[in-house]
Image 1: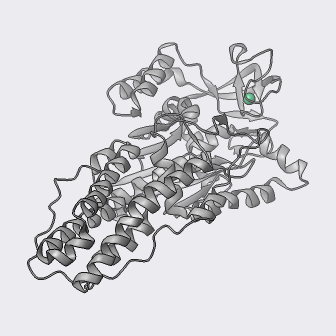
Image 2 (image 1 turned 60 degrees about the vertical axis):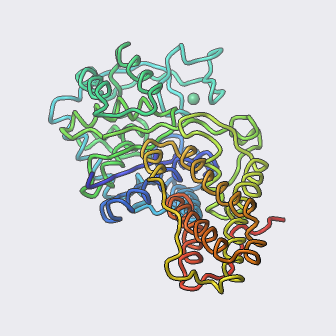
Image 3 (image 1 turned 180 degrees about the vertical axis):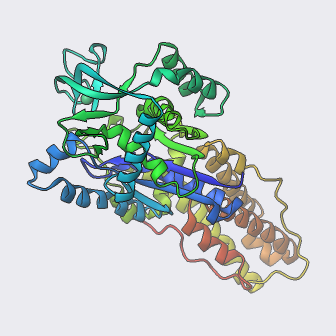
Length: 468
Ligand SMILES: [Zn+2]
């Protein structure tokens, strides 16, 4: 691998970012830093952004007496701000209202049309504005959208359609052969069975939606917001296409593993290498929702616990592919247990002991610890972030146990050569821990490395101060 291009879903800006939005962004940042360390930062590209068009945004803007663009400018900034607080190293924050994106969208749909894969048709169906998608009768519960508790609108309109049917076999083969990896396996099977059932063509444009990108050859239509949004990955590629991994939530898999590949094939472009799907987070075992009052602003957690702790918590608490529950209580328990009492205490104790008893310097030729090999990288490459962190914490546990069982504070007085050797082993393990943690907890990793690789080791500052 010489290049790695990673994207996250771009968030719809009808509200502010919550903790559920943060998970995949943090995971993408971990992968960015991990591959940067392997192949060089210049060879890695990380793109995130916001999805800003569509009837729903226009409605929200109107409610606040704002122009859609002003509404978009304000709300988009909530997302970029939150990602900066989480210390995400994205290369571009793409907005679907960016001029270069609008041009790319027009160019791509024109190419699909020139290649003969778009046709004009009439569509009659049920449209849920909350979803910005057509629903079928079987999606409804008591005649309403179960996710939005609203009755969908019956619309009959002229649209331009993409011939997805022309590509379903090709897409299916690519997924079966993992040329387009759909991860995890359960999602791959889900999408393959969806393709087996036959996938209907989709409208790529809509009339009467003003807040959108006009179709170049028919300005009475604007481009369907999902088609517009998916193209961001190509707009922002900057020479890195095809994407190495699209990291997304499981609810939008169909758009990424069927519709987007069909769009790319219709425009003669290569398919992405992988669609990596994470589960849903609940808060206190309930779906995150404004009406339930359990929305967590990631900025609040970062302000209180620090970005590294929140990054650690999100990836440690829940296996990435699974649904899982988070809460401040659980974050606090990880903070106090794994971080402050586990890692923080270890670094503080060992640096204090080495400063006090060896004046911070190991004698020339002190034997240290040799790592058994890199056990962490394969887990990160397989998106098993929680296992990677669990493995790193086995090292933390080993090191803390070694300090305790050898009673290093007494050994320093009774057997200085043994103390020196054991302390050196612990310091070496702490260095391995810090290096392995670099993609996950970049600031903590740097602080630890600065402390344990100094010419003269001194007592480290507390890494995880007590939270009131
Ligand atoms: Zn809906």
